[in-house]
Image (cartoon, rainbow, N blue to C red):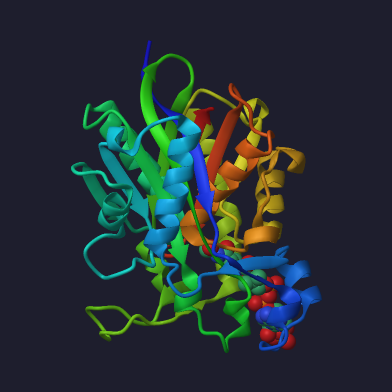
Length: 319
Ligand code: UT7
């Protein structure tokens, strides 16, 4: 029987401040109707003083540890996906390690923008199965509000801040991560990027996106990678109980499900509540659906995401 990485617990965290579309309209030339019709977003959370990628990540990790019934000192691997670290270095993962009071473990950040959580999950899964640890925290955490151009209505209405975490262990049996698939195509850098960085401008920069072109690539790439990961796991779309997608746009979620032939009732949608939280969106959505009882033990779940680079990926797992 195969040894697999299994989800022992999930957790999430959101900043205190909620910013709904109506309030956003007071400072940005937009409307609730445009945002809801084009994206499905109704509200988002914005990090305030003292709230950072690492503090949100640590809070989501504590919630996941509590859910798993595991003490932080049992963790020997932390993989944190983020494009908005607290500092250029050291990694936010090591900050989380210190906040959780873990004296020694492996800790590092993974950067694949909105696909970051899928990359982090795949790396942690490989490391656990090759005996590089027994229990891992896999976290997606972002504070995109700090890299938005609040005068660019085409992007600033789309994103929010938050974090989600999983505790992974390993076990022999049927449940756990069945397959992961990752992709990148660096030719599309100019469609979704930040116009700054330590080695170029010496600044943090602001997010820039050609939304319509990203949208077109997203639907094609996501449907393809979901088909690919299900094939790798020896499954078809008919086996899927829940799709837990990256939450960028409700229209992308619907179009992807349609292309895959999966009912839209099987999509976990949180984009209305959280907007696009980049690497945090998949674990945030997963935790939401686990805690509200939609996702149950034994369910077949596929996770998927697509983001800057382009990068995209998917995972199939039995919860
Ligand atoms: O997480 C990484 C992956 N990211 C994504 O997957 C994002 C993918 N893209 C999208 O979700 C959509 O393309 C957007 C939501 C970003 C935009 O929707 P769209 O239907 O593609 O709109 P558009 O960019 O083509 O703009 C349509 C119109 C334009 O006006 P004109 O030129 O038609 O007069 C924009 O100026 O909507 C206008 N517009 C707005 N109007 C009101 C753009 N942003 C806004 C806004 N409020 N916030």
